[in-house]
Length: 476
Image (cartoon, rainbow, N blue to C red; front, side, top):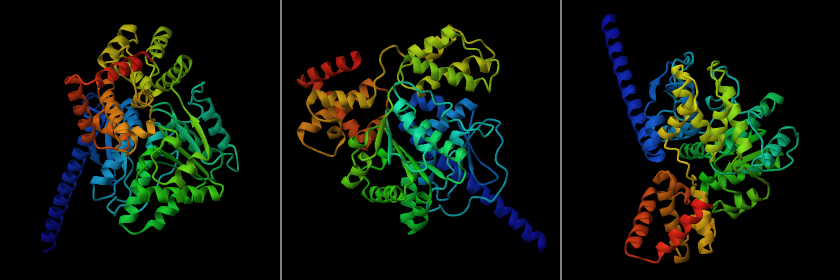
């Protein structure tokens, strides 16, 4: 009888493992499909398609990247989205780890089989997103290079860390994607913890804040969520534009920030737009955000790009001591990759993968081949923000109008043109473009592109506007 019970138990265990594996596989397919749409086919094929997923003995999900460079790219560029999509899709809360091939997995602890927590729990400066293989912080003030494009933001960040009472509150970093906002926020969190372990800093993306709040609402337990985000000395929230237009979340966000400011606790926020241009439905929240210190981060100039590149190469040499990047190659890369520090790092990673990983020298030929494979043209690389501002100026409206919900013809026409130009002049995916136009669905972008295309083909005078805008954007 005992043997029969044991056999039944083993059979049930195998059945459970199979079901668990199938569930994880199903969720991973959904995550990859979403990322494919959001990132676009070239980037998906290069970075996401090569990832593997497995369930660890701790019950966490390990996303396995081929190398440490790939792991860092995935964590920095897609980690938050992977965790958000997984949380939306999986019925079981699981910790998501992004690891490099061969990196040790965490030791067994308690399996993650409990329901999703009501609030996000995270120790700033300790997540996989900002530590290297030895557990040292990756994003610190020491690795943040300062130049004219970011010196105000860097000075404000250092000032708030060294002050017992916030000198400015809230502090709002804004700038295009890849200019260093997230690096600076992690640097603040890390410095706070190192300088005074008794003070607690919590870094969250807006998606994590939103996901935690929605989960708390569903489970009718918002107290735990409020305690998590309010019982800190520093609250740092990235990509706050994702909160805009969601009234209930805006309300909770407003009360959270107001409560922390009232208790002299530092609030640090970041977005791709200044607070005055965010499409907040709550004027109280807009007033609170604009009442603090707004710090722009712009595109790095040539000197700053060279500093950033030298820093990234020094960090890479920790993994590949024989790596030698000649001065001429450094100068070439710094002059050629002008859009953002993130793109500069991505190109460097690809160069290293084509040389150091294969035991080959870093030559101009190898760099040229890498740039050609990445389709890096010498033509100016435009951003959606630049297009929105240029279209707004051309038609006498504001960029905020173009991203708003207004349906008047004076706004709809420029909006459609801006969407059309964003699709034809950038490599952004349709879902990404939609998000940058006030959180619209990709089908709205498709409709706008088709409508403008039809007008061009019919000889509509709109063609003159588009030609003028295209010349302005490419020559600007």
